[in-house]
Image (cartoon, rainbow, N blue to C red; front, top):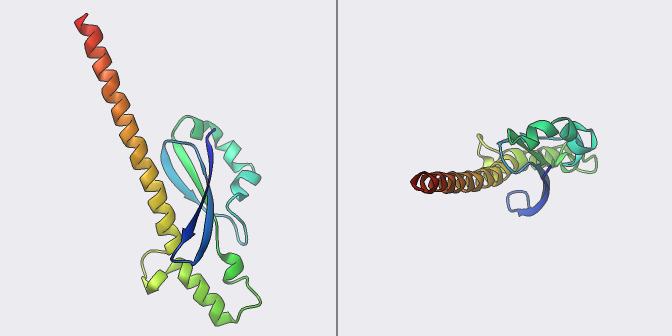
Length: 138
């Protein structure tokens, strides 16, 4: 099974974010850790291996994302309003009520990869069609 570690700077959160992607084709499924969990939790709990046949068959990709729980509601060193503010930065950047920074950035990454996979699949299909046409002419 393809396993890819990714790390990037999130301008919306002002810090590095990490994630694991399992599979190299299929519908991207964005999965989140439990409270105070990390991006590798799905793998540690055996959920990724359980989903392995579906991932290997190319039905799905698992995008295991990180959280900011330790910086928001579970940060007991911060004042309650600061915890809420940090949570809002992750969920509602620039006070946009519809989409969260974390989701947007990770969904954009997944969409980009799926788009690239579709282009590769399309080129492969075209190559196969050309091969069939050439064999039929012989």
